[in-house]
Image 1 (spheres, rainbow, N blue to C red):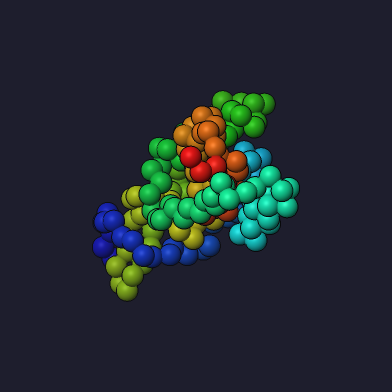
Image 2 (image 1 turned 45 degrees about the vertical axis):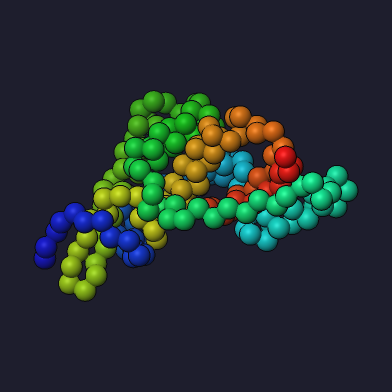
Length: 183
């Protein structure tokens, strides 16, 4: 079998039986999933919850024709995430939400995530591909990695600046909705 690095898009990897599947499942269940749910305060349960959030704003009576709805879909989120940015975001989440975790423990968790990235491969026909860019779609840790990293970026670029006229933003993975005041 030939092993080589090559950027491949359009594949969904099935890592449920990959070499790190058991450790990834435990990592998500024990530490990573709860960390993501606490850190990513902009997440809603699903797209229906995002619509209900917009509906609740409308019911307050504070919204008039000067408000606009925002709808953003981030294309190729998982393919676009650099591993170093994911690790930096995970570190920020741990420092913010789990300050009691030791530096050694945080390093160990980050190394498990990196191992999961490094172990991701996919097969197309008889060819094997190493995933060299992005977070593997279908990976057990991928959704939490995507959520934590996107919140980390949004926190720096949007939430910390509180843009004038922005009323709300809700996010379901890579779909963002909200309201802003027309200017």
